Length: 589
Image 1 (tube, rainbow, N blue to C red):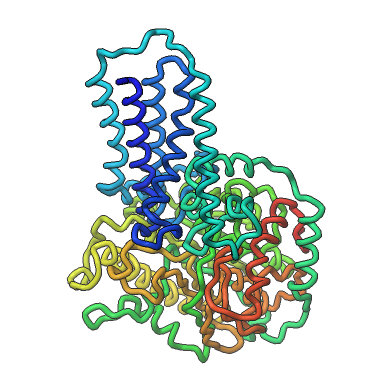
Image 2 (tube, rainbow, N blue to C red):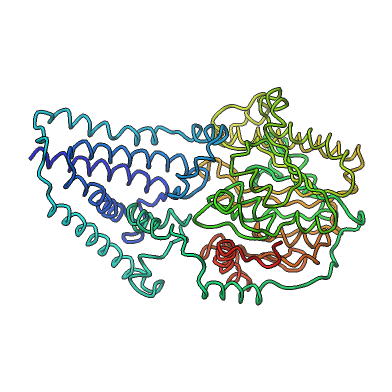
């Protein structure tokens, strides 16, 4: 009897840990019954616990294995609670294999996300150890009898529970699904991230089995290839005219400043009567000379910062399930760099990250940059500046770029505004004296103000060296950043605060773009601005100078705004996935 009670306690602890994660990331305890109630969460995770503990029916040292399984679940839950605040999704199983991505930046960001709740989840298995100690005199025999009937019963119990829950979902929302199989296989996205919602509706073990089944690379089918080809033919316009090309120089330089975690809500934000970002404010206010959009919807997924780079460089969307930078860097991508190099441009990338972080070095080669300057080259300056990346990369760029002969593209990647935001930024300014917002938001704004100061110094240096008037300068967010889980704890434009910044300085004429637009729309816009439309690949987005874009697809069925472009914008996610896997992107060289 005590042996049975041990597994019941193990199951309860597993259910409690998984439910803690689910309720934390969905905030849905009080929603209507079959949409996402506490009852369904418990049923989901009861099925998970049954399947997880099933091997204990046939293994030796059953209690030991039950303890091991419980600790594995605790570690998974702990990592999810660290992952969610930044990515707003469940960490896919494929990401656990990205060991090359482990870096100082990643570790600092993870440690900054540790909370009392995540530590409590990690310590829950100690309750099972305590119960095991209490019943330790009721030890199992050294060779316990394998109970295959119980094992089969667990499998059957899991399947029955999953079938009941799926039937309930289908009956409650039958208009959204073609059948029960569709209700089980569909990745839900209307409540948030794709992986998160599969877990939310189908449980962790169903998600694990689904991930295992879909991780096999079956290649691209003929039907998929036809879908991609038809989409490109119908929706990717083929034009060679350059009516929007900048007139500041025959071959202007392109200086692309990609800003880490820059939220649009910081622009024009005052704290105690002082602007947090005076430089950005001034640039955003000048719509006569600059192209300005403060409503670029973040479309970065599991690759996060690398996804931002990927979209801006290639005009392709990232993958929903995997990181393109970590798993597909060997593909033959078209890129903004390659388009410019057809006109004899030199290509330089400058960032303060480690080469392993999101495979910076591999993707720099894939985009065809000639030169990459990162931590090994900048280490001395980074150490002297206490790793304040923005100051180092901008000062380095300001000193290096005037020496480059001929037109160039320089991609500069900042890093100071990266999470975590739990440590006070030094030195503190008037921002932290405010009683508005949370400490995390204060720290984020201190970092943002610091970036704005470095940007101002960089632009002044460009003016002194006469590069400013001969260059198109792009300032764009790599992705948005939640900063604080509670929307009332931070300023915002929308509840999710997923708006990014796009500023293009020195185009032919200025324009204020209301949006919403997607990050995918930046690539074709820059082709227009730089006069590169002889380059065959125009991307899967829409030039903001040729179209009045007022919608963006965040996934295949989650969107912001409405417009006739929306169906194609949503289908573009599937098409981009096919093109990347097939390695057959039109115009790639």
